Image (tube, rainbow, N blue to C red; front, side, top):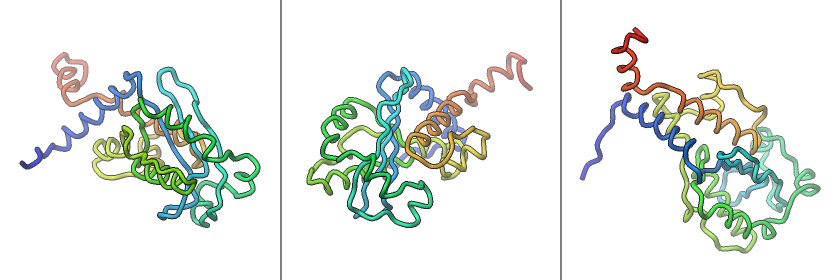
Length: 204
């Protein structure tokens, strides 16, 4: 059975409505990670979780690691091994609480498959066989892609639509940036709403 192909307008409308649903939901949280790199051997070194309703920082922490930080990854996030050694927590000490906090939630992330994969790799590197892919994830990137008309990075979407960012590329800042993007999408008019406004003479 073939999939129904949506028009660009329908995709845009869906992105707006899904963003509204996210903000109205009581079980959505935002998650972001910074990592040693992007390979199958890399691990999470910074983790942030932001609750939406009410808005509250649930986690913002470094994780200790033995995997070297890739040069290109470090240029992006600026996290050093000395910082994670000094301030980081041992992953085994946070795993159970992390999973407990995520199990009943809809986890929002920008490029969610990456965060999911790296968390699974981090658990395995610590001797824990747990697949984070078994949890419920919602990727925000397809929403921005459908609204914008093509795939777009978080920082580029913010720049394109003049959404103020929280600063440099770090886990908690990216959570806040992603939330700002969802709020922006939710505030837009769907094509149906525009037609209603036009019919009422509010817009021309």
